[in-house]
Image (cartoon, rainbow, N blue to C red; front, top):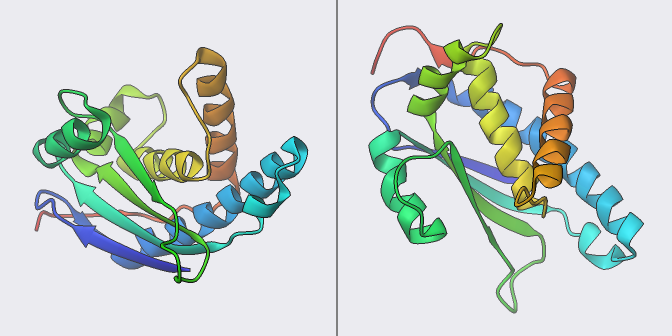
Length: 169
């Protein structure tokens, strides 16, 4: 799987190598979860499709607002938005998607959660994005609860190294 990181925010300095490593680990956990979800539902063939490419766009509040409007038709800022693409006929199979991640929100929201830091908050946004890319839905309270339990479980299984580096760009 190819993971590309596009840093469009300029406020925070991030460790790209650590981000890629975390994204790869979360993608693997999400793929495993997806395979199990499709096998249980009897939809076996989509579960076999491996990841092909995921682009991660690191944005700030101002940068995610137009993405939120264009993709979700929502106003204002949010934490993460996902976009999944089916293969174009003739292309190799596999899952392709984009994560639009609000780094500024992760840095600002983390202190509100007891015992959390911006690294863990940003990791949660990535986990949530990968969960959505594999078909998970949080349109209901039950769906939200399932997703959050799964994502927190993934965070316990991955090695979380510092993502935010000291200093500003």
